[in-house]
Length: 506
Image 1 (tube, rainbow, N blue to C red):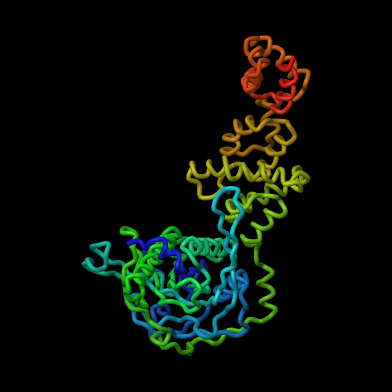
Image 2 (image 1 turned 90 degrees about the vertical axis):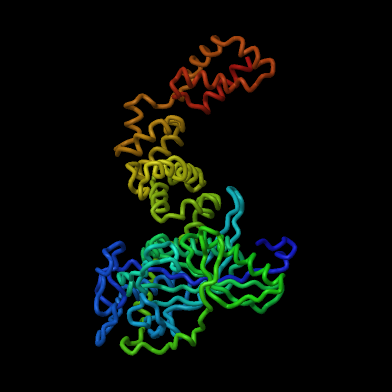
């Protein structure tokens, strides 16, 4: 099923995402019950989250704080007055047969986030602002487990675990500003970065902490009216989001070209077959029979409280990327890698803040060197050792700063630094300089000492000297290698190259 290229160019996709972000509060949104993931089934439950008669919900204040901070981070307008509503629908893992959510007066509206697409290393990024329609608080439902088969239709039985019922969620609804699967996947990644930087969610899609539903339609290029909207569920990775959208665009364009109708429905993404399949016709908001939640009072956020929470916001990923580019002179590719993980960016920030390299940082020199070590050898070590975080390595940011400083000063070469790096990564070291002195690895930069060794190398290879002087200039690398071998890699490469150039010319 592939629409031909000429037909595809006549249509554009209109895509919006509804993202459910599970908050990492210790207790549920309306009851003092643990939200710990992986607890035995039906152990984190209470009469409140099970909807027993006569029980009353009480809003977890931390949920409100996290919602407001997320709204601020997404450049939203925070409502001074909002309320909760009952959303009526039946589902086996929804014990009350209604969900407490927010409908017409959400906590935050009218925001945006910036996505950044980088095609390849060194390329200029494409940046776009994606609108945020609204952000609201609600409770999660439980979880059904279908036994006997991977598919519900072949299951022999179903079990329900209510541990997740009542876990606090933020639902974040984007404007229909996205136009491709790539953009939608990057929007999801940026949203995950933001909630992780805020510390309000771990954003783990594999555990259901971040769940994205896609609304997608296609329309002829130039047409303002939207096409028929289809919702896609069951995507557990950003790669799946991109693939599902790309497939659905193809499916809808082909259906239009073949004169087939497109229905407003909910479809599921089948990872195995890499396709979307129909699940059910899509409900409208009127089907949920919303009305104000009678057991919870309205929410008022004072200007003083709003200002306090705003002051607690960290530097967010987009701001970090801009700062790294403009102040440190790093490429868009480097800034993306460094800011993707909060702990990596904090490690990098601590390393470049050291006084001994601050002067060079103003010229963007040492910042790039530090970035190369963090993104290269250090990242490779973290991955190979299967460490959870860059903070689990023995090499502290201050020590990395000293290592880079020694290279910049010419005390050691980059080659020597790589030789001692495994030791620095695996066990704490008080001083890199003391370590290289103890190992006798201080770089030889004295011209008199180097000239003597270069003279010995040239005298030992008269044939190669003659070939060099007859035009085979690539042999200079051979002589550099011989000097390095003679000095056990301690010769200053820059000085060695300069001296060799003069000596070999005769």
